[in-house]
Length: 109
Image 1 (tube, helix red, strand yellow):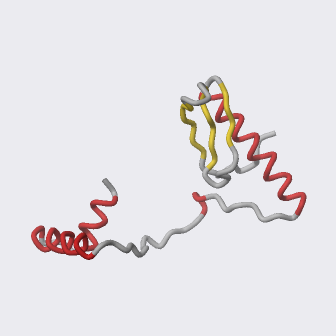
Image 2: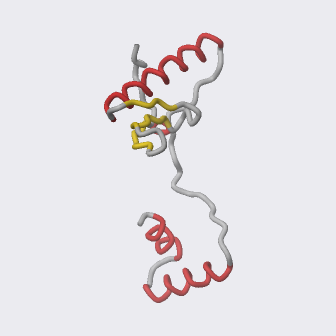
């Protein structure tokens, strides 16, 4: 049975080791589903997640919040070596933009 209002984040990729497609769910990193086709791998991981959520609900365990339902401020702190900070500051100054703008541009590449 499928999970009602499933908003979890899924990915299907090829597994060279298993010679099959593997279905993954970001919010449940310990779960995976192997299948011969990507469609079957997605269907399998979605059913597995639904079963796990059902079991967690039945035992009173909290289920992970879907990443798609979380709100993000758009801010986070990054620590980097002083020489990299200097290079970014110089690049920002030469481009006539803020350090934030240059860092955001590089992170989104």
